[in-house]
Image 1 (tube, rainbow, N blue to C red):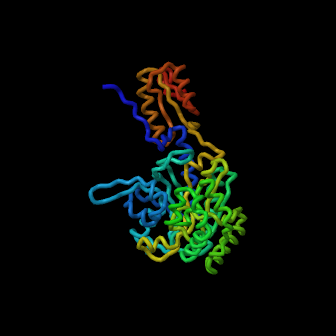
Image 2 (cartoon, rainbow, N blue to C red):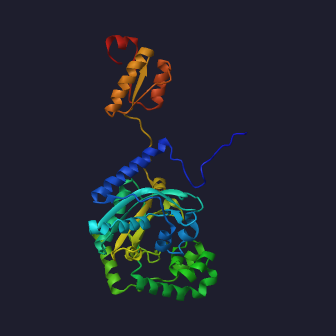
Image 3 (cartoon, rainbow, N blue to C red):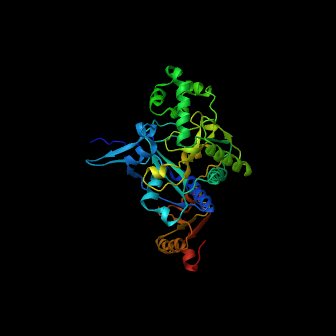
Length: 393
């Protein structure tokens, strides 16, 4: 039987030891900053009922129509989570978190799964870090969440990004915006891409999120403003902008920004970086004031965001590599020294000192070369003379 070389699945990535320190660094910074904003970590499962995403994201969403990893058995249909907001809301409702504390400020880190064409910064298994604030509709919460996203990026040593914001308004406002779009795009339908022709029938707002060059050109000439916003939503958005201004946080209002998911209402935002080309978003989020009640929970406001960790890595100016700067490497010469060395190595590790040992019985020169290759900071040598004197070199 001939040997078969197995390869990783397309759209997945091996995170190798030399890269893991970056991931550990970004996770450590994430936990530190979220903690300073009084957010608590939550860890929903990777597997959920597919219906959860069908209901929350919308049947016409690109993710639901084309990108979900589905697992079926005789009775049930499951999905590997394509995003975390729906899972966090489901956990919030199922575990009655609204009854333990009125306002829930939650964050998460972990893998997501989408069956899409792999490309730069877009994988089939990718990672998100993000947060959800559930329980309030106040504009000050929007300001906190956007400024928190900005704080994270600064801490990741990322520069040259843009924060774009918009308001979709309430459900009634979104309906009016849909009607405005339908009226203005009806005569231009033949010029839209095939996907947007479907969107025109099923969810016209999604046309604003299309990246097709011709569709972008057509949409850019529609002269969309905030005239669809009701007085209450208009005031809410004005207070968000005022709050961001008070924090001296730079942003731009983008009236064409809608995001690709049905649950968004009022404030939406996207953070882009020019180094990523046409697919330039490194993170995005927004308010979803109706989702919790639509999934069977209380009628409370909510807002959140997520960053793609792989995309953060692409634009970070600091690439953390594996470092053994504190490694102690133990070299023993002879069997008696090896026995003593094993005891010393055990004591070092019990003292939480990063340490390793030459198990290959190399010559002293070869073992020293190995220690250098590993980037060890200290080398301990035990030979016959050291054993006699009860010392180490």
